[in-house]
Image (cartoon, rainbow, N blue to C red; front, top):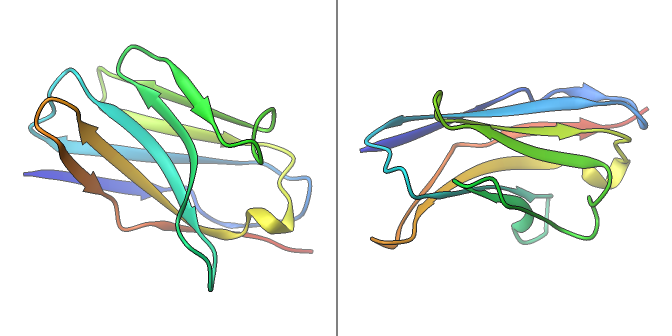
Length: 117
């Protein structure tokens, strides 16, 4: 079984920064894709950024240039550095882990990010 635990969510002022972490535990196959998604109240969950086990990253247009996704494969941990935060970034941020070969997908419980003055 795989477990994902997010941390780092907080309340921050517009223009501020936060760093989210997602720690994976359990049986983690080396070939996997990880990603951050977010869901604001009344809206559907949306992709923020993804990263492959090889380090190839992809970003939503809304966060390109402000957010940076990274991972430490030795620690089975993924990060999201968020800079120049805007009120519209307010959401619950979820971590996702996918194993392409088996098709299995796992989600974390989410961490709240609130951007407000």
